[in-house]
Length: 294
Length: 335
Image 1 (cartoon, rainbow over the protein chains, first blue to last red):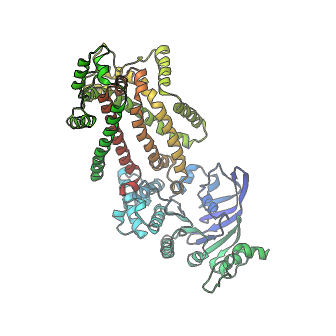
Image 2 (cartoon, chains in turn brown, cyan):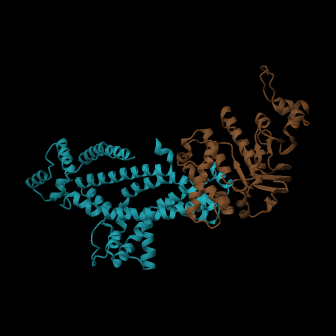
Image 3 (cartoon, one colour):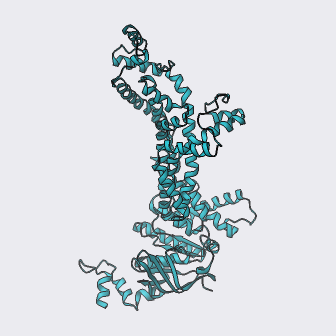
């Protein structure tokens, strides 16, 4: 059984102007230990695919026309909200793009971490290393201990003190580490990272990527990394899926896809990356190349 | 933190000093002679002069101000020409009634307003949302005195379950005075009869005063909750499996409170300055009635005294709001 299996996913979103189909027959299979990169330009449906896995698209705006998502055998699209909550935070961890807006500014880091840990422990007490009949107080204390360990693991120095600080007291890179800590504290089997390094500068970006890689090696989890940065994909991912206008054009191991792209769009995407040798005026956008390719 | 509070309290001094100059000047520059009013229409020039001397009205205005100011710090706030009692004593008598009324009104508005606003935001465009929106609009639009009359008509004339006016039945003894708040005093002394009676008297005027802050709090709370619900961190909290109850009552509520807090702070002072109408309709022996009487009889000292007291309460409530900002928004605390 695959960790995650998406078959023929079709999603339509409603707006004032009516319903538009956004995702067209998405197929994707992720196994443990695989780091999948999902690349594509803005609006290609990468993020909506990611949100669909945890079923976070509000029912009022999104409608699945066809397809299925199976996570470790659970039928995600037909699960109850209760069943989904068991997955979220515990089985599926999520990291979003902007570390400055994804931490609640009014609460201490520790409060948010502890709440996520307690939630994960509700369904699996072993997350906190406790048996099922631990008291509330014990669970809280254990959750705090786990939160401190987690902060240390993502590279926060003095985690025992910093756990009581507020988000605004940290830099962007540190905050992204905290979001990773929050996503990982429930010991998930799948990590969905939606552009986790876009808002960070290059050196911090590298640290965060290294951290994610290390966590994958350590825990043998699957990762879906949503990004528009092919450099990130080449460095970190084992597999890649190229998305364009709500369709997956090409999937496969990173080496194959990036070395011998079979689809014109993938070639266009690769051609749009500036190199040291690119001269002024030579850099071409995807639009130009796609127009030429017809 | 403590240093901040002390600094803010010290800042009150120049503010109040400036205010006292303005109020004093305006009160003195207005046409009309309070001494003539106090002495009566048939007073001889000699009597008038003696009344003027008695109240120090014969001295030049700057000197009068200086006398007033030195008296102020010693607890001598002048004498009311109308009641012939020291203003300070009058204020001590009337202030608790007004504060009790305002506190009760704000309590109703906050206790009902915050959950209703939250609920209206969660079930946006639902039945509750429409009902609260309609009531809010009415609450803001309707004058308080008119609402007071309606409440009297409904609960006194028709249902006959609440007293018409006043703070306590004239024939009964009010609870032993500790704070001056009848409800708190009767609680402290364990006088349940007095508690019931004072609550019954408090209900209608407090309700009449609470409607417009209630309406504003609901609207404010609804708007800020909707805004907070759309924040990225709410999505993160949902994505990590936290229950909607925990997210709403813990993580969203605290963020949404900040803007509502501003409204609450402003309303406390707005209600204090505006108790006159409600106090008149319900014959509530508070500061508003006292001030109205003083203004009508051109009785300066109480007017200045009441203005200063309201200003002090206003500034203090603003200070409390500023401190509470720090509780709800940790970013404010560090700056």
